[in-house]
Amino acid sequence: MKYKNTLEKGSVRYIIFKENNVWYGVALEFNIVEDGDDPDLVMVSLFNAIEGYVSTARKIKSRLMPLNQKPEKEYEDMWNKLQAEKDLKQQEVYTFGRKDPFVYPAFA
Image 1 (cartoon, rainbow, N blue to C red):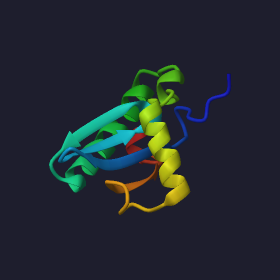
Image 2 (cartoon, rainbow, N blue to C red; image 1 turned 45 degrees about the vertical axis):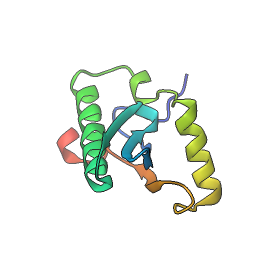
Image 3 (cartoon, rainbow, N blue to C red; image 1 turned 90 degrees about the horizontal axis):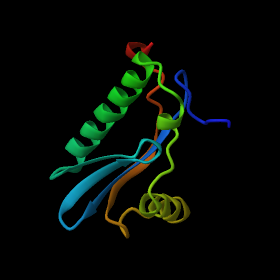
Image 4 (cartoon, one colour; image 1 turned 180 degrees about the vertical axis):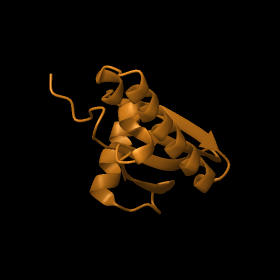
């Protein structure tokens, strides 16, 4: 099986969104979810979690499956809708995009 993410390179999709007065940050391919009261802090927390996840995977020389998880359907559907519409105001979405946590020297 061919994986998109390896221990050396890859990217993860993320979404920062609001639901019932709580902000959530989701890293789709890693199935990491962070929450909080402020979207900026949630984003920082999510990015730290992503970088720690990749760092740990490298340290233990993990198999590739944990870096290439199947996202929850709810988040995959949200991602697809955001890609199609690109209208963050209509959604309760702060931001979304791709992060490349594999390029930082600290992870080498």
